[in-house]
Image 1 (tube, rainbow, N blue to C red):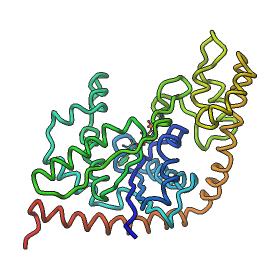
Image 2: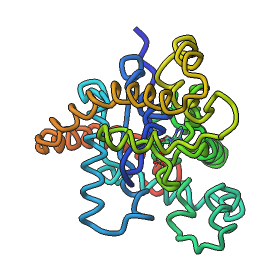
Image 3: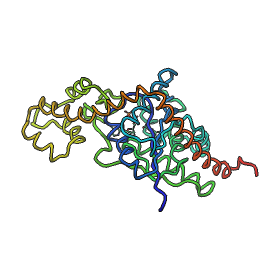
Image 4: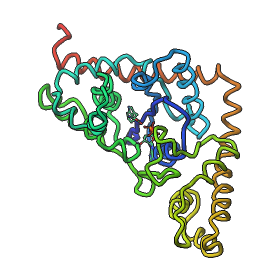
Length: 317
Ligand code: ADP
Ligand code: TRP
């Protein structure tokens, strides 16, 4: 039988997960874990640009590992690891820094946004796409499931692979993103993209109260019978056919529609929350999953790095 195709993705441990992370990215990891050989990691070195407190970072990393397991990643099928446990990522990122120009990185949305806001940008954020390219290219994945906001980063990885291949000879497979159309950009309670940074999220593992508060806060325009922002989120939980009756029966009754949404969100959230609570009690298990995953990831990454070091000429024969 032919080898299974490979999948790789990562999430930064920077805060509480929201339903945008779940529908935009994590759910795909879970759905695809049988079909692909999967490498899923916690991008802790990427988080260092914004989390600069040891205690907080430790807590965020552990919580992200628990989140991954709670949504259904099976460590028997998926290699789950911490980026910082595989130093080959930062090693390769340096090599990429050396073949990449400043103007090329200045075209990134992240850089342009920071510039537009007159914010001083740290060097780590500036070269973020190079570390991400290294994360990806070390494992030669066939697909990289991410939300639409990460598309540009995947393009950086593809361009960088191509540039390296041109200079040093064929080494990297060009990666492709995997973004399901219906969940590429999940809107937040204000209709903008849902994001930790915009304070417009519905927490994935939130209590019923948290969910209720968030859903009741969904912005509804006063005219019309149909609360668009409520519907846009509701569509993630029920098919449009199923929703048609609910929305027809409750025309103009925003409160009833929001209550229906709360019930549907809660139905998905409850089992995830329960699984999460169980895992929280077993830190030793979670740490052992990361340790084992790190070991496997390091072996794969080191094999690729050997080839790369030879190609660039730092290995003496
Ligand atoms: P945030 O914007 O909340 O900081 P992250 O940057 O940590 O989220 O994103 C983690 C993953 O979740 C990425 O793959 C990203 O594309 C995806 N994601 C985040 N927000 C959304 C959203 N609103 N819709 C779809 N995918 C999303
Ligand atoms: N940049 C991604 C985010 O903000 C996280 C990430 C880091 C990632 N390295 C990656 C995602 C490699 C996919 C593949 O969510």
